[in-house]
Length: 132
Length: 132
Image (tube, rainbow over all chains, first blue to last red; front, side, top):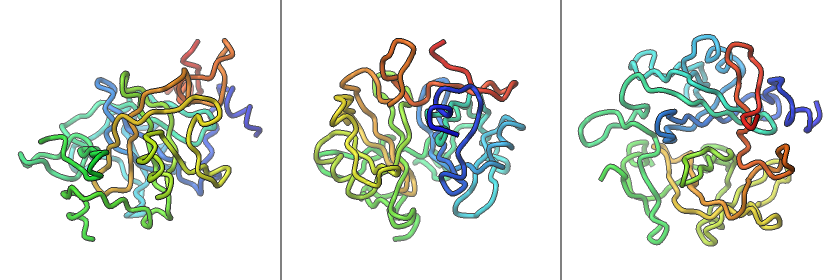
């Protein structure tokens, strides 16, 4: 399929093969616009997401399909899915069922809401914790 | 470096090697929270971004460093950089110098603001254009 046919079509044609089977997905909280995490999906994970309406990924560390929150309850309910121009990047817009998507814990012992809990100090070139 | 030392540190230690030299970066408009594009950075692109304060990527199609907007004027000025828990994903929060980051054009003949200009209809499993 030509580039223009990917960009200006209403036909979903995700380019998994172009990227070795895995596409990046940005997970964004619908209500606030906050970026929660970046992950990968393969075709199967994407299809499970469509079927269950729960954000599902391919775990590159465990090499398996991973529906976020199946054990922890931190499920991410799909509100919208956006697809980019050349159909090789995805956004899941979600609502959190519980408080946090990150496996790490804040100083109150709770899962951090987002994996992006540190900001780079552009002058000092070091990270600082947004929760502080 | 152990996992915990990546997650709970203020030391920037991006894990380029873990991902074959390239990390995903989500580009988000600071003012609105809108997701504009997803791209990749290698170490050099990240360092150019820090130095110039202009969003710079590794073009996986051209295999070269790519400072967005150098020719078009659609420069993305860096406001903030966020880093994820295991330091293998990045968010650039940016201000657009001109109107649009996407190389495609809307019906008015202008560069689309974001590459994510289509939403998936979850019932019909087809895309539709948000600009419509």
